[in-house]
Image 1 (cartoon, rainbow, N blue to C red):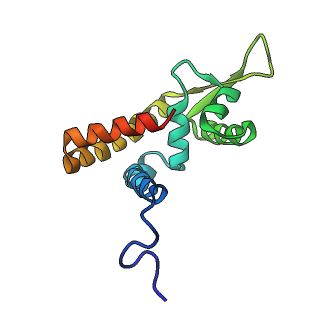
Image 2: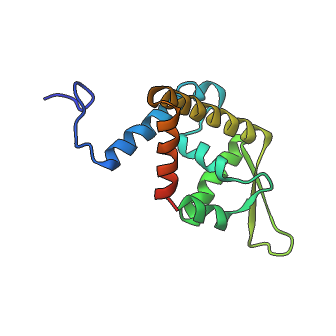
Length: 145
C-alpha cells in the first residue's frame, strides 16, 4: 500500500482540490515559522484575528462573517484571549453583547500572517506573470460575493 503523500497527486483535479492545494500552500507558509513567534496559533486563529476590525466587533457579527456558530467563535476568542491576542468586554448599554478587539500582540500576529500570504502571492505572480496573476485574483473576486 502506498501513502497518499508519496508519488503523484491522488484524486481528481476538480476545482475544490485545486483550491485546496492552493490554500495548503498559504497555510504552509504561515505555519513555517509561526510556532516560534506565535505559539499556540493555528491558521484558523490567524484568520479570525484578521477578521476583527481595528475598533473591535461583536461576537455575533464575527460569527456571521466567519461562518461559525456564536459558541464556536466564542471558544476561539476565549482561547486567543487566554494567550493575549484578543481582549473583550461587555457593552455598557447591553451587557449581553460582547465586544472583541485585538491586542498589540494580536496585531503583530495579523501582520505576520499577512506577510506570509504576501510572500505566496509574490511567488504565484512570479510563476504566472503579473497579468495572469491579476486575472486570477479578479476571477476569484468575481466568483465570490
